[in-house]
Length: 249
Length: 268
Image (tube, rainbow over all chains, first blue to last red; front, side, top):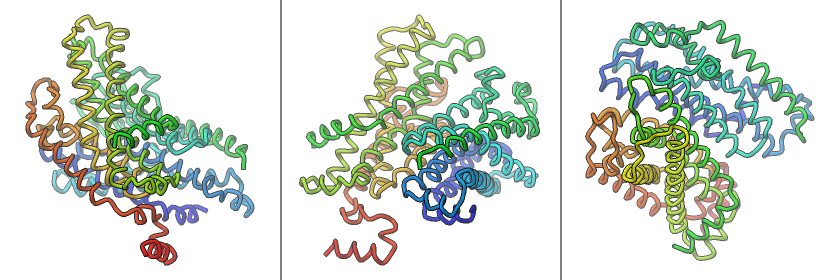
């Protein structure tokens, strides 16, 4: 079923476009790092911040609307149901496809960042960065599941879904940005929103040093972040399954 | 041309897409309020309406306006493809180029309207939420000019993207993604003495934007030249817009034998 979904996605140029976009993002960031004479770790941090925390949730929201509305628009859901494949199965497979694409996007971004790293120098601990990118792909997917669930539940048009994804991603990014820039001090409740949680995991994953000591209270290790996001993901998936099952065929 | 633009506004009444602009503007202002509120009492003590206005402009160009403008412009043109009304417009002896120009003008007017809405939200938030007592008539006037000027320069910077990605049905979705990144990259350019050369931030010198705590000096002449270049680029792209048949061909139609035969037959 996953293979079938990927076969269908071959027709959607947007998928190839977003993967290319992931590799293009580090180009301006590399130029900035070169100008400011900053090492690879800063380049990776910027890529994580803008690519994974801001751009990836937007992309996942758009991909989700494409994957789910594709069956509705082409009136192919009934064909799948007569095979027979359950609605729950279809939904879970599509979510799994989104997870795989999220990891691919994150790792592709790392690949392009490593190329930029040759210019800015200081590339080391590549396996750790790779692990971080894979984790980031998984965690950002889980963090975006609430928005994806709303897209499925509302079952509206593309504009609504894309707007929702953008607003969700921007709000999450802005909260993380408030923490990072030391301008804002969001409370525990706000900083526990899914996307800011991924940022809190990142600052726990990499030791940021004395310069960022103000971020110490926000640090979280992998296990609690993963546990919280999995719980959020499961709840959102269950709600999405319930609505998807009762949707008019 | 004026009649076509008027028609576009008539059509706009039916589209809920305008809400994206409203939400975008509100997100920008609300975040600016939060930035100011959490910033007071720290190193930025003494912030007033002037700083708030600059924060709103910064949020507008980096997060909201480029992608919203691309979405609106692209959507307006794309509806002619998806609703299959392009042929009806063309039979009313309105050329594809003229149609594209009128859509771009409509998008420009909409951008200014959203900028006015952004200014109103900024002013209301400054008075009712932040309770600034340094608001003078000069500051209000400056804020209005700067917010509207910045939004319009954003429109000019994005116009080539709208023209390019509207040459094909549904092509504008990719344009929205690019415009989003294009806006964010403006934050890197603005902090590194490249604002005049980067189209999104080229308007800073023209509107007299305060910038990075006055550290960066903007050059209006360079900004004007960059934006003029964007206008020329837009005109060139529209001038070389594909013929109707090619524009209407779907990707699958162009790539398979049947599609090619249909296109060839239409050309003959």
